[in-house]
Amino acid sequence: MSCRAVILTEIISPYRIPVFNALANNPEIDLKVIFLSETDAGLRQWRVYKDEIRFDYEVLPSWRRRLGKHNLLLNLGLSASLQSFSPQVILCGGYNYLASWTALRWARRNHVRFLLWTESTGADARRANPITMRLKRNFVSQCDGFVVPGTASRAYVRSFGVSDDCICTAPNAVDMDFFFAGAEAARANAAVMRDRLILPERYFLFAGRLVREKGVYDLVEAYSSLPAGLRRQIGLVLAGEGPAKPELERFIREKLLHGIRLTGFIHREELAGCYGLAEAFVFPTWSDVWGLAVNEAMACGLPVICSDVAGCVDDLVHEGRNGRLIRAGNVAQLARAMTGLASDVSSRIRMGQHSREVIRAFSPEACAAGMAKAFLACDDSSGVPDWRAERVRA
Image (cartoon, rainbow, N blue to C red; front, side, top):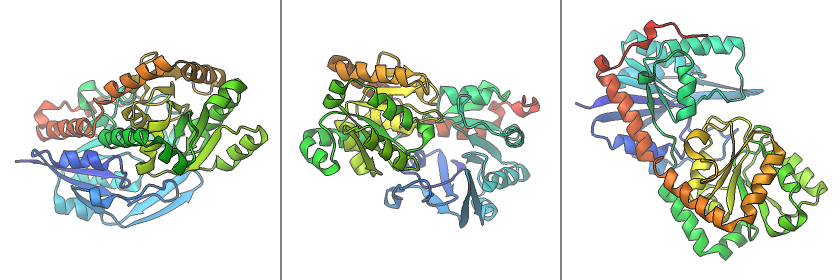
């Protein structure tokens, strides 16, 4: 008999659909995904690719409001949905929505195993206040197990006193075949893609939200400090939207940085091509629990310059082999890394090849396998220690 499993997650993210499709193909898992909302239009401009969904799912009725930096999302019908499906295990993506606590209470009342799917790391600069941390410790202390994407998040969960054998790794993944194919198609038709997106002949690429926390000001400043001759040879493309865009545009105009191109938001169909024509991907974030854009860039065969606080670095970025690690906020170090890669063709090629080798282990199928392992371990509860008997450390 298959294990009835519910995944409770916020929105229909395009990069999660291949993972859930792979998990639904597992004959040992009877999967239902419950989304709290279709999307979050206030933060993301992703398309909702419902036509690609091959798993059983439900979108709960919702009401969303943004209060400053806080995102309030209220839902109806969660308990009824859980009661109807009667899962043996629930995997909850986070603790910061009321629905997460509703699911936890339902699981405890109905003696259902409850897993927390968390990407948090100790390096995340978004420090919670004491009240929030107390709530988080309380939530964690009631979970039966944990699913994490990689090394940094595993270490963070263990810092709460959780034993290692109660943590399963489901490596964060993107549709590698899609991005690889898109990059190759762009390289085969480079002139057409450059004309369509108005891209320089050579360029560094950043893809993500244009917010200070992503290190975009550091990136533009580092590029502006490169020798003028080098800037004439290689540009900088920032693909994305966000509140920092107007200020970045002013800085670019004032400094006469003609080599910088702000594309605005690019949907994945053209983003793969944007990766494919770049010479390196730069991710100088100050705070990021993972950084899936790094997965995308590596799937497209790019070397990566990445800050040391990104949650993915321990697993994806190998210094000197497929990229360069820099200290978050160190503009001079970032500029040196960009100069080095721009000037060394053989290193870029070698590092790009190594990126492709590393990222193979971070497929949607691998992520789904990690989740299935967590579900099936919970299905056989005799094999899972009850770590909750020990107090969660403050």
